Length: 63
Image (tube, rainbow, N blue to C red):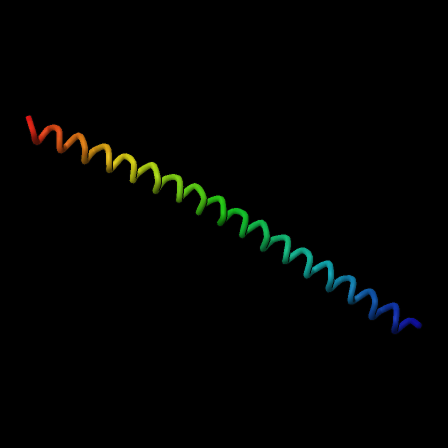
């Protein structure tokens, strides 16, 4: 019986470790997603700004 309890305890400790590692990985992935999401927004805003500057340049070239 002692061996069974020891094995069960090892499984629980292993499960706790797996859970801890998975939790850390989920947190890391959430941080990466937030960075990509904000990078997409930055790219969108920069694209809009480039378009605006191109329009201004075209207007100035006509003057």
